[in-house]
Length: 512
Image (cartoon, rainbow, N blue to C red; front, side):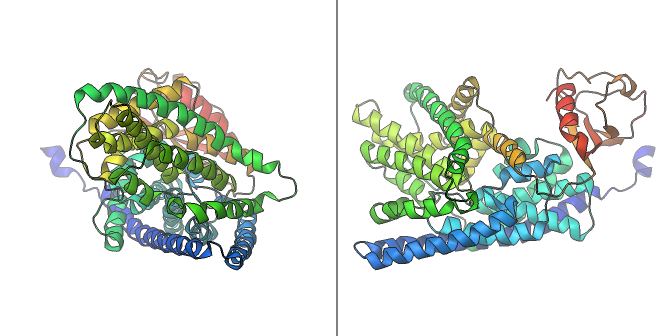
């Protein structure tokens, strides 16, 4: 009782949550506007291609438009390479301390470039750019308040969570994705700030788009237990196609680089011009794929049509992403998964092995499985699709398909796609700023070398300084005789030049 009576009030987490909410409101407005402009742009492009059928002059206008966009965005890609692609690898690198850049140029160029690239009908997703936009808001907020070090990274992570939440209206899954796939840290301060920011952003987004789930697919009949064997086969197929996706998406940039007559920043001209036949003949599949998923889930076409759609979307998704334009793979992955799931279900129906009523379940489960395999973030995949579809009835099929797809990709040697993209980005980019010293967090997992050791007995990597140990609710200032325990989170101060070495050694010591 005496301890409780004298305990000081601690508003640290309240302040962090309030900052997360403020960042979430700002990021929610920016990303919702971003999402709205892309939606209107896509409708305009589909209308244009409808008019352009048989009209050579309108097609020439598209060619001129493509050249202008290529020159404009290409210039931005050259001067600010951090806006390239989805943006998730850049945010992950920033949270790891390996990437740094000025926030304002990235914010406005990613916003405008993303609207122009994704809104033009290319097979790119808005979610990756939304994550980077949100993270950049967090970075700008931290800079305005002169917040540095680990607290700054917390704000960047919360902004990233807000960006994805506003893009998908899925605050819980958005928080989990940032923790599981981007930040790789589940400390209390991180998740409460990320969740608060995601909820605030989702609140703003609902004012723009309403309460209807983004991928609302209705179905009446649950999957019979006798049909669960098909989910195992579906998971294996998704894992195989997921590994294929990983291989191609990580190499398509190199294939573009072999085109010697066109500088890399202007590769988008190829994608814009190759979009013409798709726009003329099947304009309904243009864009990231949100409406296509809903359409397939409501009334899946024949297996042959779905096969054609899958091939076209797979090829054009690679063509689009390989250009380096500001646009992601998040929603295109879900779209390909939905098409594969519907194709699988329609084949079973045509072979009289399943009822047409269960095809939507295969469609929903395949979205989660395909994303789980490619990103290697199964928990996020399950929760994300659950929030986006708006029902809990399919949790068991989602979990089974995601697990099988994840294990299949793992056996085939696939790494998390965003981590692999970050590695390639770091190999190519040396233009970003660097900070002389940064701070890194390492949770101590089960069977870690550090577990049970005193600080003085640990062979710490060169250049690393242990600053503090977080143990539950307590912050411990370490001494030589301080014992490190399972579940602790170690905060290290690391000079930039030792960053890669320290991270490699600490991943081994902490059991990551």
